[in-house]
Length: 469
Ligand SMILES: [Fe+2]
Image (tube, rainbow, N blue to C red; front, side, top):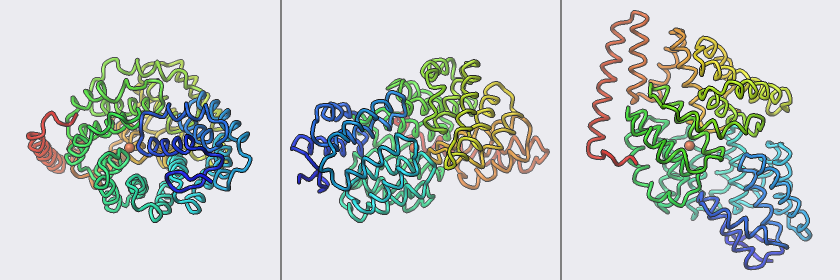
């Protein structure tokens, strides 16, 4: 039986089929922009079930109605070619069926088991990590990384995949070491750049972050739109925390929004960046309107609570009130239909969070503070990374501050300050709150520290000025 580049047996595969599987491995793990070439090969294939199976997963990962429809067709073709399929290929079929049926825990379990039995199957591992990510299951992401590293120590992609799980489990030193090991093995590994960016973000090491991403950014030109726009989104986050919001807005226009406006991942990078800029007082002009144009077809999709909440906020900030009302009703229906494994995400988090975000967008800060306060303890299962979910915490904090709920806002800011003591904005916000409640001495202290940090940023910026992009 033929074997692919990872040494895995592939049924009914000729040389072209093996080449296509190897090509997709490289493209998917490297976040390449040539996936269409694999799809063309899968469309032509008549014997090897792995090709339509992988095409189905690729389509499902798009989070779109068309993607799901196409995936069903590919799965049907794969089943028709499955005579003589081996056990690994049968597991792929079962995992794909579970994904299409929306039973994500079942799909994830199959991929986790596959990571144990066939740790060289890196596409299976990648999809398993994607499912864990989509459910906020950091430990699940890590488990898969731990299972594949021993069988693939020579593979830089695997070290990057492992690094991200470590980072999401807050094992930041190990995560950074694993990701830097990947980069030392191969500089052109965007997922490893991404893992280091998360580690630096978590620790408030913004200057290091800007420098690293600027140095690596020449390797992103062949990345797909998700990875390209998301890495620039990370760069913009560093810049925002360095008080360089003009440059962050410049990145929004030049890199983050506009690559593939119809794609869910591009859309949430744009929404999250505009929102974060506004939270720092930046006027983003009429940019919400363009994003909202692409969100309106998504009101009833509900592929992911994490995506939906961001779509809703984008529509609300664009003033698309009737779309917001329609989507809120649709989200409530979705929550009522939630299966037990997804009830916390949809019912306990998404419904109150969605109403809270809608309230924030129209200036009802007390309502937003109350509703987001209900949702925030249940945020993790909606999925996304820690850095991405932080958007909802930041909007909650903004609502608390604007509603004058000083004690609650202060507790959050003090925790933020402890975790990321290098962010001048946090000190300034604390200074404002201390003044508001008459703690003048503490206010002076916070303002002094904020000024010092701002001077440090400017000093660090001097020699590298203009190189963030
Ligand atoms: Fe990220």
